[in-house]
Amino acid sequence: MSFAREVINPTSSNAIANTSERHRKLKQIFPGAIGALDGTLVHAVVPVDQQTRYRGRGKGECFHNVLAICDFDMIFTFVWAGWEGIAHDSRVLKEVAFNPTSGFSFPPPVLILVFTYKYYLCDAAYTNTRGFMTPYSNTRYWLADFRQQRALTKEEKFNHAHAQLRNVIERSYGVLKARFPILKQMAPFSFPIQRDIVIACFAVHNFIRKCNIRDQLFVENGENTVFSGIQGGENIGQFVHDIEWGLQDIEYMTTLRNQIASQLI
Image (cartoon, rainbow, N blue to C red; front, side):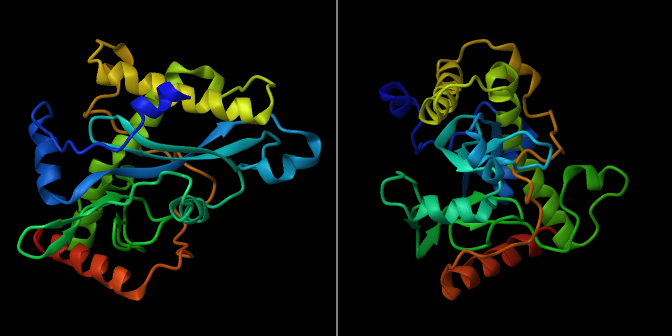
């Protein structure tokens, strides 16, 4: 796994020189965003006595839950695999983020005139708190929701812009799973080896991207590609906020979200 540690790591780059004008405009709306965070399900083969915990979608198949972060160049900067499929995304984030052995990288504060905080873009399964910006609840969010009618309110405009920029992680998962069919039909290795295979797939994905290798999957899933389907666990999209962040952290991000939304009027 030494190779994985070399190619899956937090990046300090915020470069947008090689992106489209549309992407640069989205980044201007969210200047503090340094990546997107989400969970996804990967097929797993587990013993019979453990299968109940790993049946994430009620179809008899077993999955384990993967939490990942990617930057806006479709490079994964953090991956944690192995959680049972029934685990809610927010629970996985809580356990991983506060596990000192996970290597999870919280977005850092930046001193300009006062301390401001970078953040990851997340969907509504997570908590809108310092370091993690989610869309407005009870408001249209998924990109498919805006195909028939454009965004009208400031909350809808915020959610639409948020979804377009956060879509990078769904596209990255799409490339990953298209390249490695084993993630959809895992071989019956021991579970630790299965987990290592998942991490290795992420590592190869990053290697191809970082080396600027001309790759058809990345071309097909570029900025103009929209994944409006649900890529994460079965509970994704529910507004469950069970992570015990501090009240000041939540208020900070709520205020910041409102400020961004007000600029979109």
